[in-house]
Image 1 (cartoon, one colour):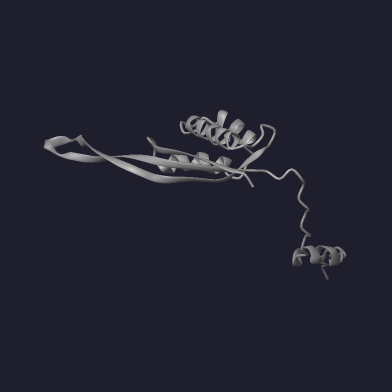
Image 2: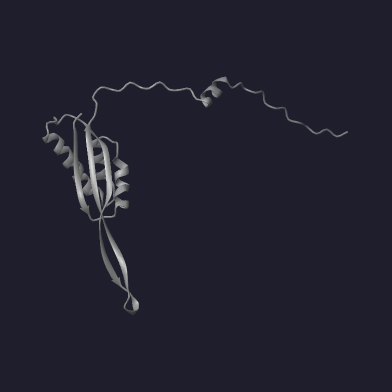
Length: 147
C-alpha cells in the first residue's frame, strides 16, 4: 500500500489548539479533509491544508497516479520548542510567558477501491428483548367507590 508523509516543524501555535483541527480530519478521505479545512475558521487550518497538499504531492511524486484516492491514516501533533519570554509587572517583577510551538506529522495512504464486505451484526441482549417482548394489556384504572 502506498503511503506518503509530510512534516511541519516549529509551527508557532500551541499543540492543544492544533489538535482540535487534527481531530476533525483524522481518518477521513483527503478531498473531504481539504474541504473541511477550507471552511474551518481556525488559524491552524491553513497550514494543515498546505501540509496535506504536500503529503499528497509527495505520494504522487513517488509514483501514485492522480486518479487514486487517499485517506489520512495518521496525524500527530507533538510539542515543539517552548520559547520563554517575560512580561514586566509592577515593582520591577517579571512574569514568565511560554510561547509554545508544534510539530505536525501527517501520513496518508491509498484507499481500497473495492468495497469492503460488511461484518455480521451480533445480536445483543437488547435486540433479543425487543423481538421477544410481549405486549402487555393496559392496566385497568382503579376507581374508588364510596360505600
